[in-house]
Length: 215
Image 1 (cartoon, rainbow, N blue to C red):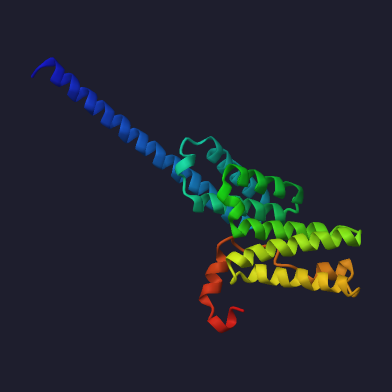
Image 2: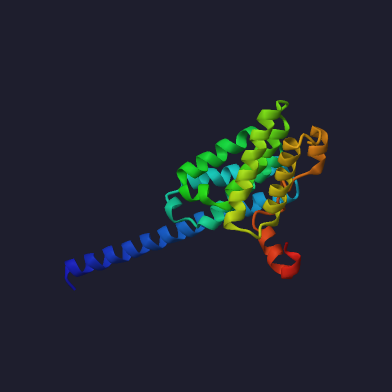
């Protein structure tokens, strides 16, 4: 066997080992990333907010610095992003929500077209509106919120959380127009579907209902 043949075989074998090692690293990195998202979601469901926030922050950092980012599944990143928003809503860290969503939409343009993006923006706009004492500013905030919920319903008419929130925002706007608006406390007590139990559960539960009960 000639030297060139032996060298070629060694190089081929070495490249195969490197390729296998690279594939293994990619699989382990992906599995670790997904595990962090799932663990953060479990902690959020248990209302262990500090631990959930730490887990989500680690997963987000892995996403930002990963060489695999262009090929990581959109569905997993979607769960990570919107569960982070859900967590911030739970913790009443409203000031962090819009920058988080807007930055994500800038990096990943599809985010800004996602109905869940508009759902959470609507909730944020609604809560901000309730905190305003100026009636004109409150009305403008409620109109923003209603507009966001309308965008959700345009793409997903069966989203019952968004439908409830849209109807509630419109009720408040109509009350203000007719000068019969509720007091701020009554508006707060009226409630909104601010929090989903899970970003994807609502649709699953809706599909399980018979058509006449879906609304």
